[in-house]
Image 1 (cartoon, rainbow, N blue to C red):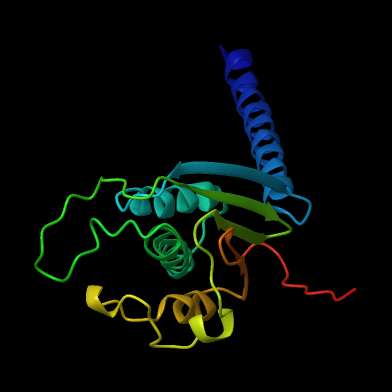
Image 2: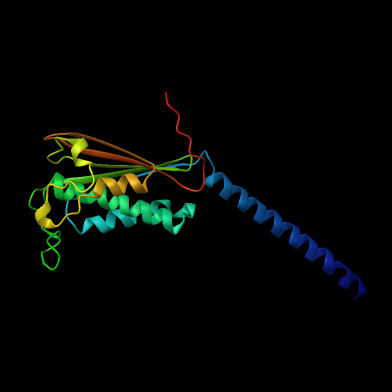
Length: 201
């Protein structure tokens, strides 16, 4: 009986040591995954219709969720993605259904001008790269299109703040477009897991 009582603390101590070692191992693996060398990529392609806008922003938010971003970071990402996708749908393909004036009821899923929106996301060194591309009508004057309050669809009560929001909520914004061929919006967002290092070649 006495011998058994003496063995119990040793067994308990070994168990605690093993548990602590396992926790350290898990912590180490998490740090590697969340560290500067982490790289992950995904791509989505969907119809250019209004009800896919919410799908796109939630999908991108889910893609970065394992990094435990702040609510503010998630809100910034979702807003920027939403604006970029909406621009592709409304201005690229001119699929206006679901984007009527306030109070108007229009079907959210009706394809007037068939087309696809593609989103590509890359996580590298704690930085989220987002690319939203369409093959719509393109933008003839990018500089003017990016001016706050400028809109080509005033009849839909659009605010003209899409690019302004993207620029404000993301750390970097680049827009390229060819009239008649489409538009590509590239954005970057630093998350709380890595240093924001912008090197110029």
